Length: 521
Image (cartoon, rainbow, N blue to C red; front, side, top):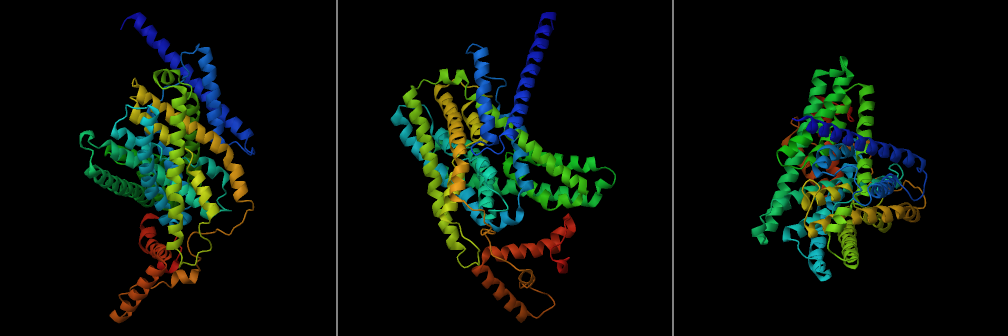
């Protein structure tokens, strides 16, 4: 290498370090301003980061005389490999498992069936309406991808307003649906990517469904295996007796390994790392020292918080990317029509499943002794919580319509710009209105919604009929009939309690954790 070439490399590296330093400094500014605005009625962390990002992008645009607003170039691989894993893992690790699994059926209805309904409506609506605005150039696969891109929700704004202890049912549904929704959207997006563009017919829909089921089941299984393997290793070796640093490092690395293995095998890393987080929280965290247990929770929460702030800050900066705006050939009026259409389709797609599925969930649980059902006000909040779009939508749009963050196709540039505008609009406008809306719909802090499941008593937990080898066949048949009757009348309650007894009897003695039913230990 010549001296001049070496000097240019040094200069390039120095410039990159300067840009990274500027971005980190702006990131620190977001944290400080977010703290100062903590009690603000209208603002939250995500909207604060986006606003600061927009201001930063404007300053850079002015300093560069309109050439660029970028500090760093967005790469979807950076997002999927480094930023998304800590966010999703922390969601699984910190989740209130009791509430999550008591509401599991409803959460899966919203997070899985809801994504299919929303994606279908957005795809069909975009396919029909975009050409009417004079916007063409997208393939059938692009329209299918648009449906999955805009079906991915971002419930951060709503979760920052809701209080888990005061509205556990509502918080559990919003939180659970948000995580499952993101995972389902990515899995469905990957299934769409595998479609043969030349053979889009009736069988293609079945192929997408089969690919989705395969990815969903195998990714979940891999996450469960990774979590159980980590728990068993920590329990068997008791690493903490020599070094707490090693046991913390093992948990962090195994969590990340589960994600990378899923991506390596072309599965869904989101689902894998989410269920790995749940299993680690349920078993592995009980096999480490008390100090390590506290440290890991803070480490995972901190990594997730920084990653989320990083993403929203970049979204604000990228909104002023002059290159994409110049590349798009649409008029201002047409562009506004496209943006408005997407927001309208998101709202309709969301309403098309939230209200019917909530009614269905209430009907399914009608025989259970629930303390509360999903009221209409709760349904409105759940609908509103899913109107905002965030980091996953941005990443999927970049993955579909760019190559390493760059595109030269006007239609693709328009879709990337549309995604950014929709994320900005829904996060800022709907995010600003979230606190007043919830204050209006939930004016009093009550504890009436303590559970989406059935009230239980310890005695009832212990009296569930189980088969026994020590009793006669006739007695076991009567027990089986009683179990079947309970399963039909109160399925969620019965399955949850049978799982608890199985967990105490077989799982916790092997993988760790205190028994809730001492007679089963």
